Length: 161
Image (cartoon, rainbow, N blue to C red; front, side, top):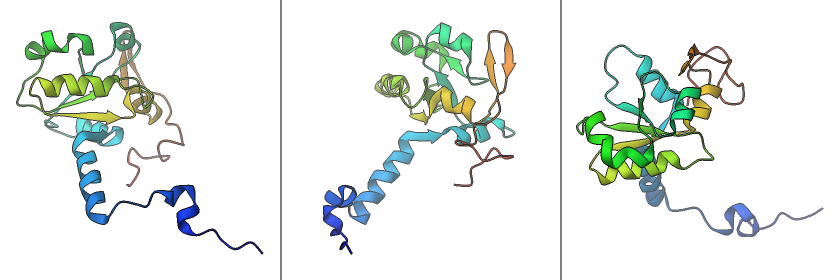
């Protein structure tokens, strides 16, 4: 029988986990910078003002293909010149782009932060908005696709996490 490898020999633990205090700082900061698609959808779907504005930082062609209902369209390259006319500096902004393989929302968040806006990035972007089964607007009207069972539980908009 093979004896198990010592924990430090496994690739996962070759670099030991951070201390609990460092983990609290890191994960706390992560939540200050990121918002989950389902949390954004729940806040937008609730009665009243969600307390933030959603910003789609993609091109006009991408916006026309589909976007979060009520989002402001402001491509990243135009943020410096147009943010002040489209956004209230007192209202936090949640940015999104295509999806987890795209850093456009991160670049948009940086550009807004440099202008003094409070900002978060919506993890998963438009891809996960659609994959989780939330309604979206296109140039042809409102659409909704069936939720992907790998991204959202059947029969509910909340994952329970």
